[in-house]
Length: 122
Length: 132
Image (cartoon, rainbow over all chains, first blue to last red; front, side, top):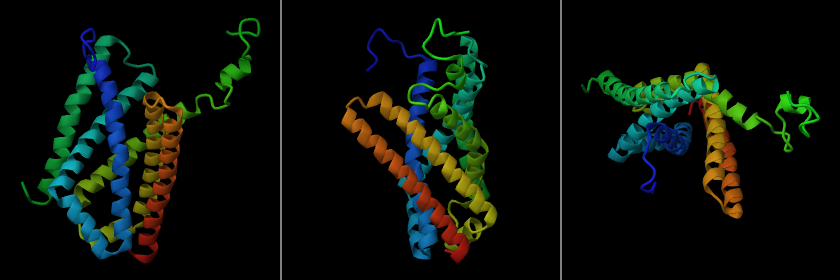
């Protein structure tokens, strides 16, 4: 896709991933509104929504949305820092990029560990 | 400092950041305003979801039906959907080159945004008023 002349860089990859996670999170709005509408509609409609959320596909989607959320949040803060004129130096941009990557993994796993721990499943 | 000698744009117009479409930096600015608002709102939302994702209907209604949740969830929905529509608009403008497809997708995203915001807030109001 990128051709031989272009070497993938962390800085362009994080920018691309910001868009991908943004689009993916936007799709999640459909799931959120469905969940709220089901809660408003009836107990049986909500039970159905909860069954979907708890299924393997539902859990996988929620896990990916969690990862996309933390990435987009952290990299978004990085973008806001750039807007304020901070962190444009190349070494800083690389350091903040790697920090976003590592923190995304840590926070995503921490959120799910917390969720399972709170339910006594760990 | 640009003056009338060097540019057709007046100094006042340049300061206001208004182009021919009179929009200027509005899109860019609102994208940032909603981004900043979403930092606390999305963290509140994710913290709630971690503990409430698998609750039964009665517990969900109890949580969603409180005035605090109604307020925060409504703010979250509006900021989230506004931010998403602006972001999707940029993606569509960058990658969809057919004019007809571009306009169609932009309309679809914007109408979907309004519809989803309305649906989400109506659901929240129904839960608060009627208890689900």
